[in-house]
Length: 132
Image (cartoon, rainbow, N blue to C red):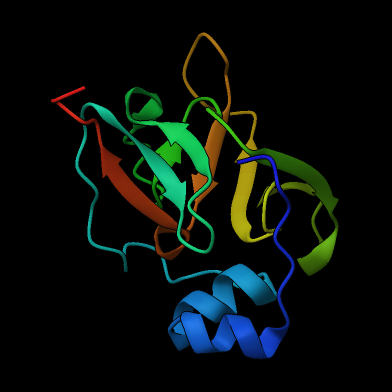
């Protein structure tokens, strides 16, 4: 999935529910603890907008911050400086479709020390195919 995806806001609005559009296309944030959990285990987390693989299931951990957290990226992640809201943070976006996913912080578990704090509405869990 190396091909970049470009769509207009109108095209994205037609494909996404309003909350997912607000978070992924307008760099919003869902309320903490508002997303029902995801399963742990074999599989990966994909971008809800384009299906690009973003995080492996074994990188997910419970940070108790209110959003799904991962210790390392597993795929198509771009990082950008974000100075909004009077803070300096590192924003995380999907490399393939430029969807806003969340932010990465330097307070995660070893060995990376990173916490990718990701909006649940930006992700889709894809279980590992047990047949292959």
